[in-house]
Length: 112
Image (cartoon, rainbow, N blue to C red):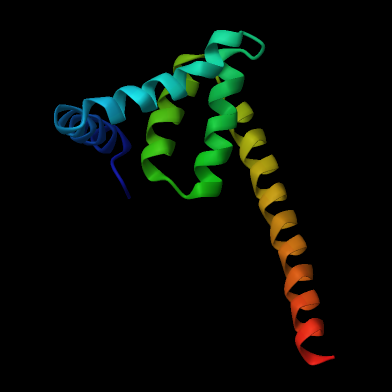
């Protein structure tokens, strides 16, 4: 099992090294990452729950480490995280179903 706390620290240290080499890249990411928070239409917790859904969909361990930490700091409960993950699972299954229909359409186009 992954030690998520250790991984989170290691990830932040490596990103710090990247920032030394390419500060504009990391600064640009930071600007993009913080842009949504400036609108104040969603709570910090809601933004972090959405980020977790995207992290799972994109299969990004670093994103999971960072956004789980942030979600907890913003008061997300275990149950709220699980509900977020349930929606994520459902949407990903739905996307697989939709793309399965595309495969069948592609098959029909090639065989008729």
